[in-house]
Length: 149
Image (cartoon, rainbow, N blue to C red; front, side, top):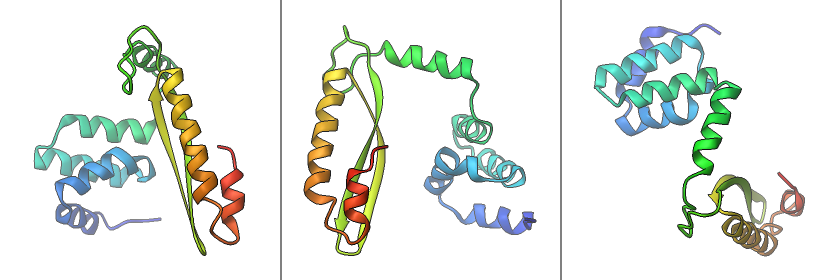
């Protein structure tokens, strides 16, 4: 799909700094190479953080397994962000939140970081909320409520 670079550049110039940050941090992986370059140019033109440029590049190309394992090693040695315990390694876990409203089911998947006890409490709490609030939507509420992952 061909894009008009000038119209895209004009569109990015109309976005707020917050919109540019969200685009670089969360959606850069979905952009084609030309749009990504225009985004990087706009970040530099506005004088926004160089970290945004790096974040956009990482989202676009991904990270290697070595980089990934290095990040895991660094993160696992931090104290638990929930209870502050430093003796225990922290882990990450994806927790799914399901809310049903008649014909609408809202599903959110969030990464929970913490020690094993804190993640277990978060997972149990999410499971209870899902069982109480997730099944109310027809027809997909009950299906999404019991879905794992």
